[in-house]
Image (cartoon, rainbow, N blue to C red; front, side, top):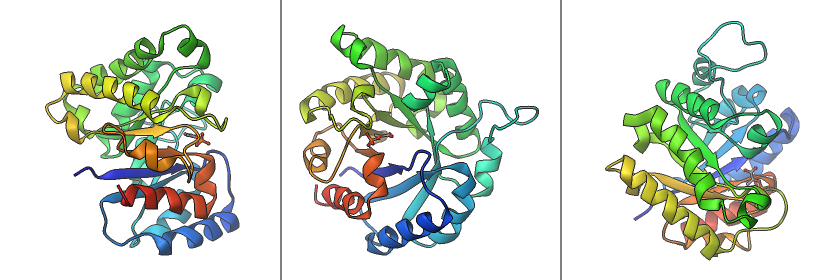
Length: 250
Ligand code: PEP
């Protein structure tokens, strides 16, 4: 039986008071022990707050980025050691907004994944094609290349990864990949993981891109979709809880 992961990505949203309200509206309603892991990936300044509020509850927490460097003269960066101080369980690496607006290459993303793993933090490695790449028939090639860079770098720890397939054209647009479109890419990624790890079946491959309360069940029912990375809907308690419920009902 799969163990789903539903991970919220707050992006650059929230402040202390609103965060407290949001968590108070979600956390008490999470099932205590279930086949579904639930997490929120929050802006770094709020890791302490989230740790304080969520420890001892079923809600896990993560960060949205980590430095590719260990320590030193990298102003503004946050290291994996620093994330560990807040018992951070997950960190997003290679989110398309970082690739697009911060010029992160697959080599940088791979280095970040390795830094996280070295400190016992699970990287959620985001891959996905742009609309232009999809229309040019390059989806498979793009996502395989992005994942290959990470697989090559982390070699023996591939089974410790979480992968998120996030078609760029579906992020924050209200346009979702159909369950069949998503499953095709997830199956491809699973095959790539199988070639690199004997434990590929237990690596969770999340779908992200306008997942919401109404489309979650059909996406999560796909054989190779093991959870969701949720942006906009993670800021709406009812919607986020409905997605968790859809995972529980699978
Ligand atoms: C995301 O930010 O990873 C994401 C999937 O956003 P949204 O759900 O808003 O499309």
